[in-house]
Structure formats: structure tokens, C-alpha cells
Image 1 (tube, rainbow, N blue to C red):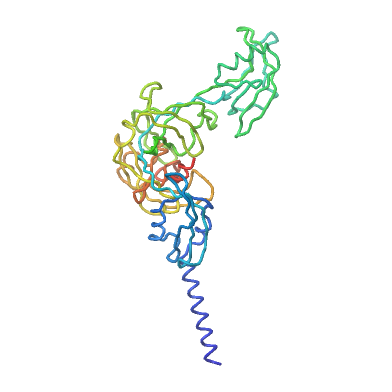
Image 2 (tube, rainbow, N blue to C red):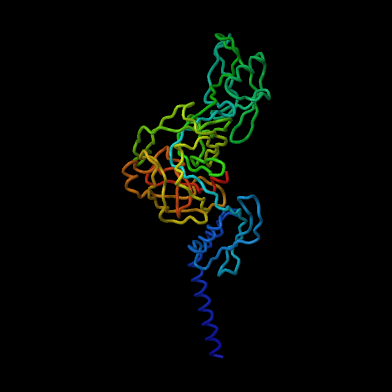
Length: 405
């Protein structure tokens, strides 16, 4: 009986020790923070099994693979303890390794707004004196007028034409705000000097900016850039695209970054000259469109596949930028990652470690957003934001988040 009790205690100690070892060597929190759906490649699965980012005892296995398009298949990826005990199931799109041209050069973006963006209000001098037509209305700076009396607004010039046809009668405005359409009625006033009917709003229908090209797909020349949306400088509103173009930039200087003083990559471009493609989408996660002229935009020898966010690990990586006047790779260190079940443009944190880049820029500059980040020879992300208090640090968005947009 005594030997039996000793044996039971010994088995208990062994099991407890085993559980402690498994617990210390298995990143359960990371495993369960993974999204329910993901994009992976076969090489990504090999990486998970070789590098074991979720622990020494976790094995990744694909099953139930079904053919989709010529580029992608669909299936299930299991993460299993000891290769046999299921821990987590993830539905995956299996990317068969489409190659991308890696970006890294600045672009000029010119966007024509879908509608008229409200940037302010003013009074109208009428026969009754100064009148403020929008005083009692909840129209805000950053609202976008998309229709008047159900007539679509293509640009600012449409507004006085519609008001003239309406002969000063009450008009119904359809306004886009935070992704929702709101309506309000407004009574125009006739300007005493010009005789035109006006609604007392300052509006604009275009915007422009500078950012960095992240990638161009080899298969169809579709591009992704910036890693975050182009917003209006005055209102901070994300601009919906009616049409737009990208342009080759000329770099004219650098304002070096310092603590609490973000630097800037100074570039110029002329609209109508050196056009390189069209813009189709402006989203929270980047600007997208099609390149019509690859010349001087890409290095045909600098190619990469997309790396899944599940394969990204802390440690050494590279950022691609042409701040020196030529496209170069610079050393960075990824210091924190998040597997993110939902899309976010602040996916991981990195630090610039390359002395060449630090001496040149002081860290991450405004205008470097979209700069590609490489790890294990794959495109894993793009620069999105800089730490104002420490410009040597920045945020990046996962490349597969950008690709899914």
C-alpha cells in the first residue's frame, strides 16, 4: 500500500511538472488571440513548424483543402499539441505565393472627392442683411454633401447649378458622415451682389498628399500604399474616392525628426506630369489602385511574397526606403507584435536600429508611411505611424491586412 501511494505521488509530480513545462513552452494567449480566418501560404505553415512561435509542442497542419481560384485554395489549419491534440482551428485562404514588387519610393496622391467636402461656413449678404443659413442646422466641418434633392454631386460646381434650377426653394441635402447618410433641409439665400442662390458653406472637392508605395502585384499591377487613409488636412476626414491618380515625386529635402517634433520627407509633384497610375480606393488601411507605368516605381530585382501575420516574430527585420535618394534596406527591430483578430493599422511596434537611417532622418518621418517592412525575405508589413515622443519607434500594419482590403 505504501509503495502504491508513493507511485501515485510520483505520477502526480511528473504530471504537474509536465503541465508546467507545457505551459511555459506554449503561448496559449497568442494562439487564442488569432483570428478565425486568415491568409497563409504553404511556406508560412512550414515556418510555423520550424520556428514554433506558439511553443515547442505546437504543430500546424492543413486539412480539408479545396481549390478556389488558380491563385488560392481554401481549407482548415489546425494547431495541435504534440501534433495530435487539437488546440485551435482556423479557416484559411491558402495563397500559392503570388510575388510582389517591393515599393519604398515616395508617391504623390491626387484624389477627387466623391461629393463636396464641407470645410467651413459663412454668412450671405442678402436684401435682408447678413444671413447665416446653416446656423440652426447640424452640418459640421468634415461632412460630405453627396446629393441635393436626390441629384448626385460630382463636384463643387454642381451645387450652384442645382440651387439655380431650384429658384431658391427649400433644398434637401444628403450628407455623408462617419459612413452614414444623413439628410437635412435648407433654404438658400440669394446673394445681393452676384444674384446667385447660396447655402453659406465653404466646400472643396479634391485633396492631395505624399506617401510611400508599399507593393505592386506582379500579376495585375495593382498597388497598395501608405498603410492608412489619406485624410483632408483641414478636417481630418477620410476622403471617399471618385477618381484619383498617383505621381512620381521628386524629393527636395528632409526635416530631421526629433523628440516631440516629427520630421518630414519633403517632396514635390506636379499633377498632370509623371502620372503613374490610378487610385480606386482610399481606406483606413491604405490607398489602392492600378499602376499604368512601372518605370522608376519598382526595382524588378526586389521581389517578395506576403508573409502571414502568424509568422512575424520579434527581432531583426528590414525597412525599405529611398530617403537617401536611392532605394535601400535599413535595419529595424520588431519589439512587439499583436495577432489581432480584427484589422488594425497599428499591428506591431518596431525600432529603427540602423545608424545610417538614424543619422539621415532621426527615425521615422512623415511621408515614410507605407514603407515596406521585410522579415525572412517576405513582405510582412508597412510603416503607418511614428511615436511623437520617440521618432526612432513606429507602428506597422500587417501586409496581409493590407492585401485583404
